[in-house]
Length: 249
Image (cartoon, rainbow, N blue to C red; front, side):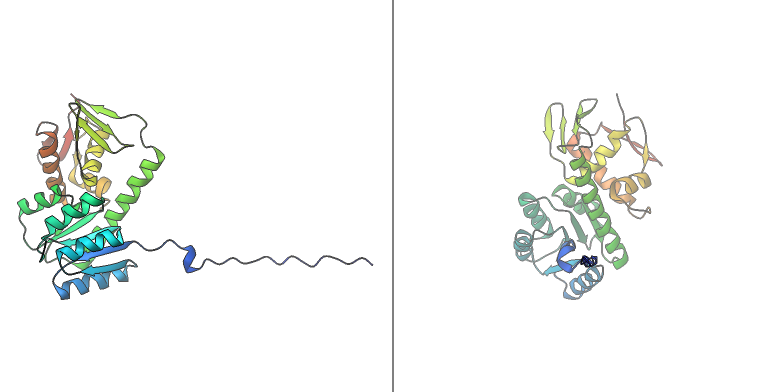
């Protein structure tokens, strides 16, 4: 009688912690201890790895050391203010920045957008809205990376005297390169996909910011103003009561 081979027992492979993608790292730079603790606790509850700094210089240093996936940044800080912190962080490495401001001043917000902030929240704000903004910014960054990796468009798009290279994420107007922060590029690219169509603020919020409601329509207006400052006032037209569009000719 010949021996038979032992039965093959299937091996159950389980995924341990080391096999999972690490959670996104968020840096919170806020000098109000109670607010900083509340923000950090809520974001940790969402599964993020959160680090907190209480002043501008330590925030810049932490951004260099940690290389966070997103920064929640207060405008009024000791040492460097939020604008200077944002400027220094973005000069070293582009990163999404959600700016917190105690003043509902459009000038402050426009300056913040100009130095590289992607979005802003005015204090006081709800933690639910903060979490929604953070998730939306991270989704937008992931989507942009996926489109770039897939080669969304092999050839640059031309609209009038504007050239948009989505693969390289570069913009030129009248043969001069224009520096846009990531959210500005995404907004311009969205408008340029259908240059003869007016998009509502709600459509732009959904397609660019990945927001499901109209709570941030003023954010759209602020970024359009920032684009007009960089590209000229004649490219993006306002259709009052509706939204924005790019004229093809």
